[in-house]
Length: 200
Image 1 (tube, rainbow, N blue to C red):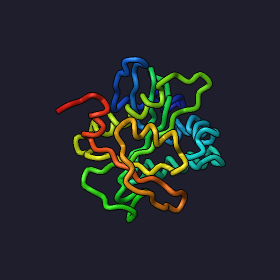
Image 2 (tube, helix red, strand yellow):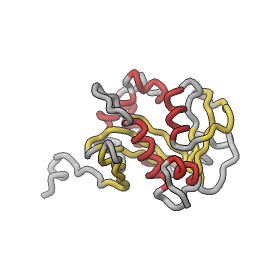
Image 3 (cartoon, helix red, strand yellow):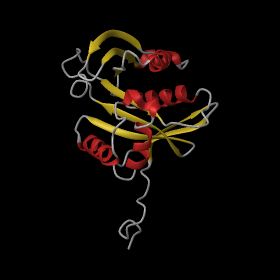
Image 4 (spheres, rainbow, N blue to C red):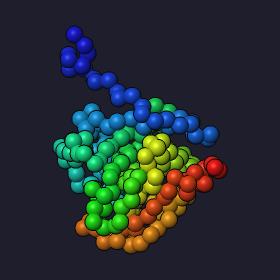
């Protein structure tokens, strides 16, 4: 009888993408398990630094339900990001023509929506958040079908606007969503690659 059937810890999902940062080392992305990862996620999304994630008052069951719903959704996926093998960030990928931005902009073939959240840390590493968003973008563009990444950060989230710009995003317009006012922004594969020193 396997460990899982005996009620032991289920195996960690394998990485689906990885990259090595010249300064900070190995980053990877794996599928999120709504049950096994719920306690970890609860600590992240309710932390004061995650205010723009809009889950400050979420209970542990709330987090489980949210990520169970994402796991079951046809147009939305969630992933745990790893740094040197340890959970370090949350990444979400969605179809902006069907989720978050449906009816709010003119979608194009190859558009992919993205959210990311860096885990809180008492010992932050210089350049870490930039390395995380670079990993997220590289993971999205690792799919040849992805032509453009679409984001809709809160207009007040100055830190994320700066990070987005650093990896190639350009703001298109300010839009009103039910939960926030957001800057609709786009980054093509070529714009991202230009920030990474890639030329064609």
